[in-house]
Length: 326
Image 1 (tube, helix red, strand yellow):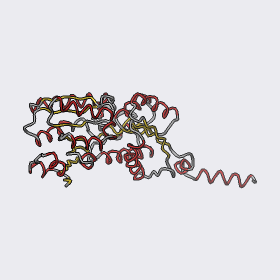
Image 2 (cartoon, rainbow, N blue to C red; image 1 turned 90 degrees about the horizontal axis):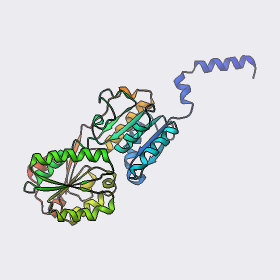
Image 3 (cartoon, one colour; image 1 turned 180 degrees about the horizontal axis):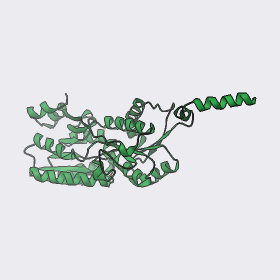
Image 4 (cartoon, rainbow, N blue to C red; image 1 turned 90 degrees about the vertical axis):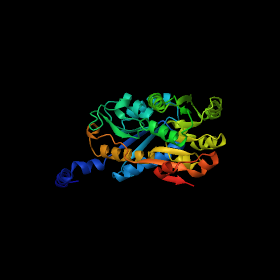
């Protein structure tokens, strides 16, 4: 190459905007950290990728994702988070509350976008919802805050039942403790006796239902936790087999034959986490990105299951349902 051609080439490179030159370099990498297993977590990961795409990032084209799945082994979370930090990913998408807390503990510099089940200030993830102020922002599905509402709906359905039980997954300590506090307070308000039953894995399901019978429980709330996400179909079948009216967080429970659900749309939360991750990849500062909270909540009743359980759904409650499965 002659000197004149070389100088011309340098001049051409200088004319290309820095942003365009950056796009020609290595594509950014998102570290995706989840407490779930790939099998149960993939539908939610797909919603996350849809959000990324809405922000202009398509996996395999201009962004890559490194997945780390804890498969319900919460004690693995710190090591998985540390691995992503060591790989110098551009953003950590920490979905599920244990993942968010582990990522926060692992780095104060790499941007973190979470999807968590409670108020982010309460969890200690941010100091302010509108201006998080650090390297962490994200989406909360308000699992904890909506727990008393699920108790209220169950009480409205079963006004003559005074003994209720709550299935709790103690492995997710921060979320479990917050849920227990909220529900104990709400149960006292309604004059209900609340029994908390710890469920660590699907192997505990049968013993937990035996406890319900022993305690003469008349209604059941199923809490948050990956063990319940993974075992939702089995839980739905067991509630029918044991004639136990129950309410859960997500629509997949009544869709699988359970009685009721009330909560935010979890897939929408993951999509919004993907959108926020895209914004961070484009250069927006997590410290200035407000934490997103849900504005839409779904109340679903399976009327066929209600009839099978011998439960009459009051017309006023039925009218408030967003979806009735018959």
